[in-house]
Image (cartoon, rainbow, N blue to C red):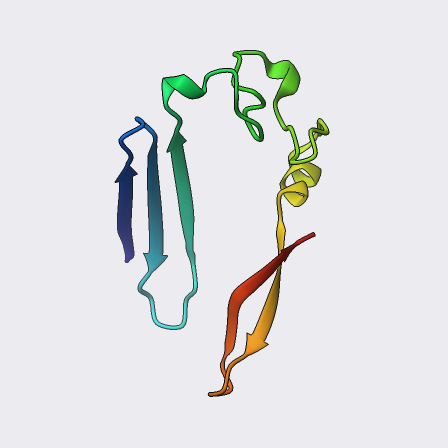
Length: 103
């Protein structure tokens, strides 16, 4: 059985973030997925960066990395936004990721 979990955040600006998590309940199985839907407010039209470029309805600047570089495939594009997490062992011996460093 797959159990869905939804979380939706609505902001005063008009922005909305919806997260859809589906996790399998079969014993010993670790299947599932996470879907993220982001709706930007209309005031952001023409002033964004990333997957949708500057959000100008032009596909010419889609896949814009954080440095402003344009990427032509999703693999190198997604890697440009990736964070390198640093694991710290706390006093109880557990790993934590409270610290991160951008690649």
